[in-house]
Amino acid sequence: EAHLVESGGGLVQPGGSLRLSCAASGLTFNNNYMNWVRQAPGKGLEWVATMEKDGSEQYYLDSVRGRFIISRDNAENLLYLQMSSLRAEDTAVYYCARGIPYCIGSTCRLAMDVWGQGTTVIVSS
Amino acid sequence: DIQMTQSPSSLSASVGDRVTITCRASQTIDKYLNWYQWKPGKAPKLLIYGASSLQSGVPPRCSGSGSGTDFTLTISSLQPEDLATYYCQQTYSFPYTFGGGTKVEIK
Image (cartoon, rainbow over all chains, first blue to last red; front, side, top):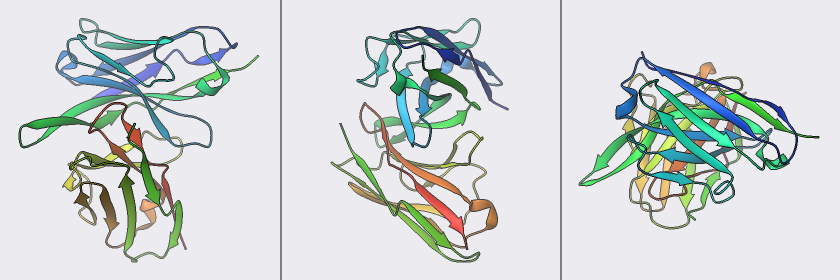
């Protein structure tokens, strides 16, 4: 059974940095798109970033582009989110999620079928 | 960016009721629409992908329909374990966007 476990969250001051990790098991990690999604307190889900299977392409939410970097270590089955210049509005539970492609005709897009339990990031002085 | 608008934002229904949640995209997204269930303290769960395909293991009382800009999630007979918040998500184009959520309560 596929399993994802996030770690690395914590309390950080505005302007600080943090690196989140997501350990994958029970799946062929290097054959999967991976994503980060967050949920601020009392708010809904917000997509943050997606990385292609081989790490060749990354996609970001505009508000985090240039501050966050998604990366992966396919040899170790690990996904990362390096966060810098953190702001209060980055406070959230951060989930990693597997992206599974589905195709309609010849065009394929992703759904997120396996999620971790999340790790909490609090940006506050 | 594609905006996703869900309605209602919350609803209360009785066990056995039919529940319908709607999701509207600000531009056409074909059928690249997913539905998720979220319970506090738990990971989100994929229910429906491609607007109408039931994810493995999801009870058949859940169904999805729609294409283009208008979509619905239907729970045919509400059960106590369906108490949750439901989100639609478009993956037609980046940035992926979620609807604001629909909180389902049991009367």
